[in-house]
Length: 311
Image (cartoon, rainbow, N blue to C red; front, side, top):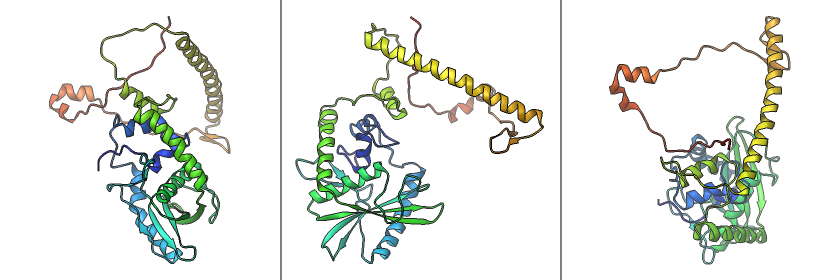
């Protein structure tokens, strides 16, 4: 499967500023091919893929009807027709409600806990998942499916708790989302203009890839905006330093009280527990002793380090 140039449901929350994991900048870098997509995913996504079919089967049993699996990750997605061909989705499944003669999207999630979720049977799901399922519903609707809503099946492996959430289809909200994301797509993907930067780690990684720089030092003149941003950073650093001094002093007082009493804990307050000595590996000494070990060395991607200058 080639890297998609269209926007899937998992990217919509990031574009709208709702995602805790991605940003508009990281989505732009992914879609434009600046960053190669990781097809293996992380441990959480792999766990979800492994469990998806089993949860979908249980959901079908509870519904009393078959759930048709959606396109797999390695398969081509469902792409909306013109003028919305920038939108695609890979819903986890679809089922048909014979009573209403409507199709329902099925979305499977594995979660660590339900802290951000409502009660079983409600429509209260995290905002970033709400954006995702609304996107899936509107894309399927544009492809000719008469959509009634979405069933979100959230499973927590820690508690063996499977919850069902019912999201009614709101076509007006879906079309508004398409409009907003479509404007973003035309401005940044078609126009090939990076979105505004933010302070996230995802954005910093993209900026380092986008502007790798060279070995030679190149200096440009400062603008008033540059000087203002430097002042913002300095003021924030000073505030952080003051807070850290207060924090570290309080920690030291608690550690001293624990130590003076020959304890390891202050009940309900803190712990100062013994830690085993850390074992480290002196790679420089090992290479000096046996240069052939260099074959095990790996080189990471080039990056850049940000520092403030005094002048």
